[in-house]
Length: 229
Image 1 (spheres, rainbow, N blue to C red):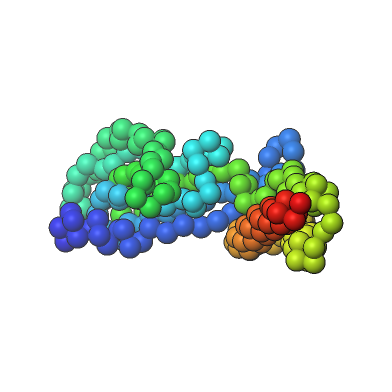
Image 2: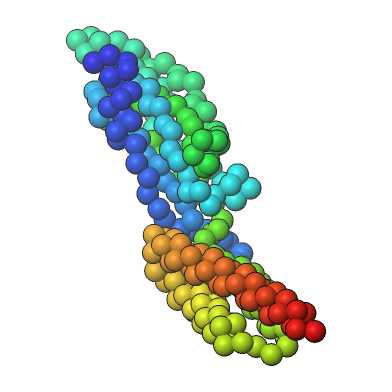
């Protein structure tokens, strides 16, 4: 098999896993993204790894990076299988213990970029430990709630549409708060936690759009009052 053929085969065996860890001081969970590459061959070969990180993750969110090898060897054997004497051990230069995080401008996400030398049937695991960025800050929720209340307080008499929108915004924000309490990483696992975050972001965006609608309604109402004078 050619080098390019091996690389293509290895690329098919690069995959990601999720897990979580707890900080030694506080009880907040961090998320660990584990990227594994498998050498299915009986010969030593290079494994190129390019793996996209979630779009919410930026370099400042990365807590730690680690590389682990299965059956890690610090040397390789010199000599053929037919030798009568045991093969001599020659020290192997240690592989780079770090890997790069690069940005894909076209697709708008960061990704792991690395190449390792894997022995026969060896597995390498690249770990990226990141902060739990899949949470909407409570202050952002409360700020939106306060802004809506302030808008309606300035608008004088509240029309039915604005009142209905305010009620919908309140329900959405309450639901987000409840969802984040019930779908922490510790309670439901990483994947469900991230899925819930996506739904909560959609609800927040809808609430923000409803707030803009209230602003437009109030502007129109003020305009009509000005015309009537």
